[in-house]
Image 1 (spheres, rainbow, N blue to C red):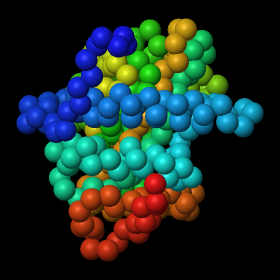
Image 2: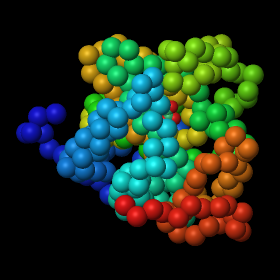
Image 3: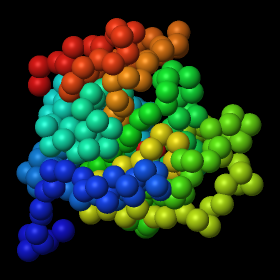
Image 4: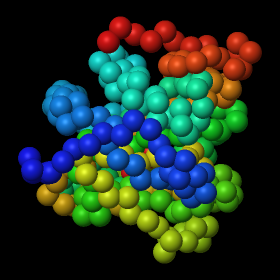
Length: 262
Ligand SMILES: O=C(O)CCC(=O)C(=O)O
């Protein structure tokens, strides 16, 4: 991006954007954060990646906010919550977050999947919206996210639609079988730095490996309405959720972690 280019931020989704999201299970959006905020986030991510222990890949920066309260400046930003509220209403819970930074040259693919089938019955009902924020420019060349429009209304949640894939080349370990989806329908969601897109937990999505000369980093910021019940499993009992805005609507069934100082 050159300094001449304008950088406008938007504070709300339009009714047309919300309708598009409901119909197709995703929507491309503009910028919510300022240029300065994105510069600070990119510097922060660069430091996180530089500090990774030997053998840990930059695609694997999952739930970084558990140990890094600074990220709540973004996750709990009023401008973000105003937009999320347009999609899911006023009671907003932070479900999760994940930096998927595909390094240049050998960035892993994200296999075709739906988030809902990966998360299974940990959430009832499965109502999560993901804000995918472009920390780096995200293009076809460096492996931008791809979606199958309208797939959130189909049956891509069935376990036997999946087959295992190699974790050496993929960020996750299973994918929807080719015969269970129509890849020719895929839409590439290219973004400039600071732009974002949203997707539904049942939308089929994935991305290609990054063999280009530019890193591709996205920050997935995941929210759900506060009537979704979180049912931790033994293996996921350390997962934390945070009530960011509004009130609990589960009748006290959820345990919320207090929002840290940031
Ligand atoms: O970063 C990607 O390419 C895919 C992201 C993803 O799978 C997700 O946000 O659920």
